[in-house]
Picture 1 (spheres, rainbow, N blue to C red):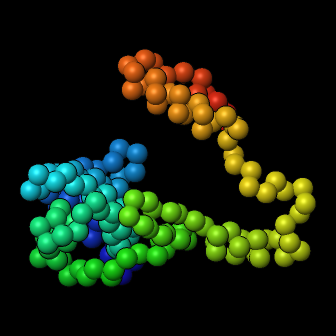
Picture 2: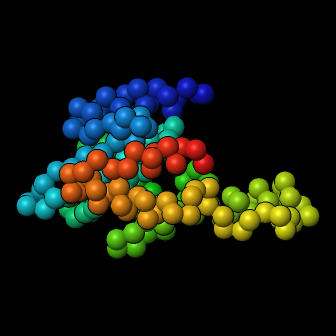
Length: 163
């Protein structure tokens, strides 16, 4: 059934918001929830892609927010936890204790093999990011200014958008 994923989302999204999960304004398929359970602040971030859920969580013990959510989901729908995710939408995902690493090496290699069978032309700039060289420094300065209550440099947005 071509519309099964969309129908599931129409049922899931209201359920998530009634459960206290907040839908992102920038991406309506991303939800967040922060709660304190047993004096431990906990966060979950849920991405919904057609009929798959990708859940990032800060704690996973038996009484954690993650465990409570997955139990509630399983009592409402026939869902299963497929364990740690290693890729999603052509993005490779690796995690450790305090970091999530996202890479697209395999996808980029497939694109190169398909569209550049002779190899990458020497005119291409290896590792060239589509941003100004000083962007990381300017972002740090803007974040620091915001923490101090000052208005961040308004040209930062214009610089980033003009790239």
